[in-house]
Length: 527
Image (tube, rainbow, N blue to C red; front, side, top):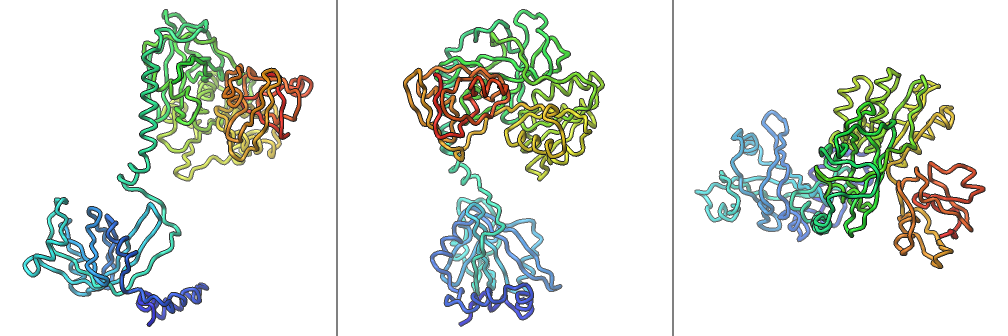
């Protein structure tokens, strides 16, 4: 016997279309399949009763199809036997389009979706209505007692054919219960982290840090779900030391394990203001713990002993045009630059990319403050920043400042090089270091410590050294300050920092172990 679905759906005109588009032979295999595809098996039955919704199509007397969504609790669509399925018809908007169509033409088509697992089942059948007065037992069986909805009738569908669709073009989606199951491990991890942070916070001193600049947290604002801004003012109410656009501040943090470290955060506020420094901190749940500690523990009134503003990402004060390119939290130093450029009346444009509008810290405030100057790109809407286009559109004498993840810096530098910009015209600062399992592991001998360790691709040499119990100086963790620079006794480094000079790298044989790796399989460091 021919396959039931193919016999119904593959009409002569459909077969012509298949032949014209080169799929006739492939579809002929379905027609000749040994499984007729009309009796439901255990696989179909299990799939059907696990659904909480489906789509149904009927045909009106005018020949127009009508598609309707049907929903209810999981299991409201029931399997009566191998050839019959049914469900309770819950009262809806009372248009009765499907009911009217089926009264004239009992044919129905269903599509059942499992978005999470990218599966779909098509069913063709004929419907008969069942009223409670006619068969109260069947209506009672189709009802869902815990679902408070009025049942108007029962739909009983005689299955004539079914077919499974391929997963192509099904976008995965998840119901609340499915998400809850997937998020359970993360929720538990987050709960444990909050408990640890709270324990650390209970011991947080009234004054944190040892730096010379006494600041107090005067305000906290949530900019995005993961970015929080902190207003820092002088603890005695005095004017703050001036800073240049692009400067950062060394801020003390208390980690979960009780250790006190410093982190560098760019000052995002207007440099013309002397009453406040504003920093913005992106919470990195998989990071080293500094940003999570800041989000969990920093509150208004907390005193911080910070370092004075420092700058390795200075804004040139020349007259030429400026292009600012930011990715994500990389907006922080460029925001200060934009304020300064606007005050100076200089020509500039700011290009700002983020995952979505809700992830764009300062996006709306910058658009209001700098009308016509800001171009935003939201990747979730398909609006990706085209580095080649942005650079090609710039004046040949422009200076380009870019801050963001490694991939953005790499793309902008490549575009600038292709467009003929000199290396001195492109200034960059990365805000995070991307480690990847694709990076080759490297064996590192710490000569002074007498230790040899293996650094996997997804770990920095700095983190590997510290995990081995060897003390190492560091500050920025992004290869911009040079604090972690170490002499290389043997091996060939792969330099990824932005701070060491060619003399320091070659004659001095130094490398920044917070970002750089190795071209050789082994390094010997003077540690």
